[in-house]
Amino acid sequence: MIEMKNVSKWYGSFQVLNECSTNIEKGEVVVVCGPSGSGKSTLIKTINALEPIQQGEIWVNGVGVHDPKTNLPKLRSQVGMVFQHFELFPHLTVTENLTIAQMKVLGRNDTDAKAHGLKYLERVGLLAHRDKFPGQLSGGQQQRVALGRALVAQARVCLMDEPLSNLDAQLRQEMRHELRELQQRLGLTVVGFVRGESLNVYAHHRRVQTV
Image 1 (cartoon, rainbow, N blue to C red):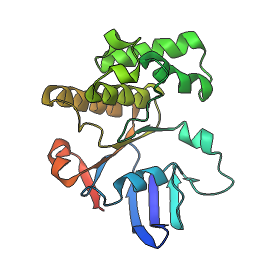
Image 2 (image 1 turned 135 degrees about the vertical axis):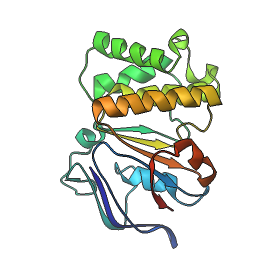
Image 3 (image 1 turned 90 degrees about the vertical axis):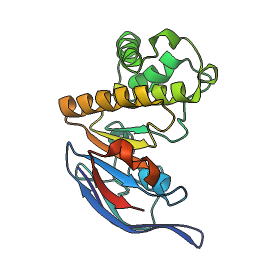
């Protein structure tokens, strides 16, 4: 499903990624771990071309991510992503944050998009906050909105940058169960990027690389 071969990236003269290679199978749950500043966030963004690379190749479901001929909007519609800093639209309500991409990218109408959005808001325990704006939520609540947004499109791949770090122990366990259930039911490929000290949260998943 995801293949990376000798991926390297520089910011000026500073090399962030050094010949990273791995192969992640369809339906697999894996973890990439490393300390803060080790390049995890950069690496996750290269998988759907939010960050360019200077060397190497990346394929998602057989499609070359950095091939100039690749239809990136179509590819990204198959890849859900939870950013470390959430990247929610501050001027949109919680519900609108979960519906806008469904309408713009997937072509769902307003009614269907809202129905899907509310369903996933309920799953992450935020249905009561559906009309609030991100700035009115706690950090943990914003993270749950980001998780819901990544899951609502039912993408084939879900990339998660520190997805459970701001949640309390009970909610973290609930979200792990929810993610695992969705992963098994949909055959979802899940890649989590975490700090080394957070690895125990993902103890039952395959650790593929320390960056």
